[in-house]
Amino acid sequence: DVKVTQSSRYLVKRTGEKVFLECVQDMDHENMFWYRQDPGLGLRLIYFSYDVKMKEKGDIPEGYSVSREKKERFSLILESASTNQTSMYLCASSPMRASYEQYFGPGTRLTVT
Amino acid sequence: AQSVTQLGSHVSVSEGALVLLRCNYSSSVPPYLFWYVQYPNQGLQLLLKYTTGATLVKGINGFEAEFKKSETSFHLTKPSAHMSDAAEYFCAVSDSGGYNKLIFGAGTRLAVHP
Image (cartoon, rainbow over all chains, first blue to last red; front, side, top):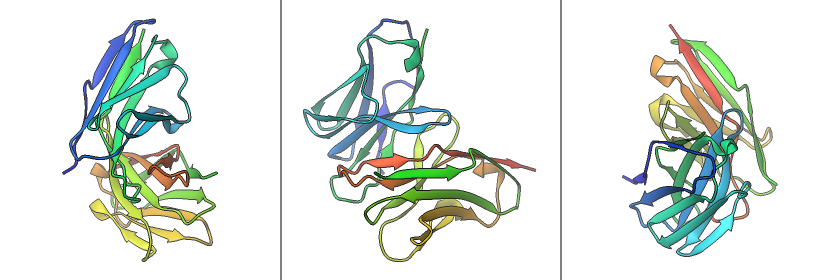
């Protein structure tokens, strides 16, 4: 079974803090994705990566950065957390073959106060 | 550009009743289509997918969906709802930009009452 894990299920941070969200997959997938999920808006793509050290902006990259130093690990970084970044963050991975199927982690619910 | 519209942000059915969750998409290329389910405080789990071939696709937990190209629809159905089906459901379409990106709908929350 594909397993995607995220470092925290719940996280509370203060405005202005630097926040790291970690995602690890164990299936040697090339593609990894970070989404945020907000009620009524579905999933919106923040960043994705198709290889080690390669990254592309998604639809809402402002206020975020990412790092992929190893194939299995994809980190989302909030440089200076703000209250409007309070959300559920979901990580997903997908193999390079054109199946488009993505495998999701359990999510991190981040609250910025 | 591709897009997905899920009609109805909330759907409520009685236990044992038919479940119908609607999804319409737009795509300039033949799409891959997906339904995912999210139980409370969990990630998304794949219910079923359409890639090519048979247009009626069967998934887990008794769900199925039919790809109708002429209607650009991919509605999700289940003949008889169970209390455990209460969850949020997301329809997604493949993004022609590659990298296995998906475009998700806004989601439909399904409530099942006794």
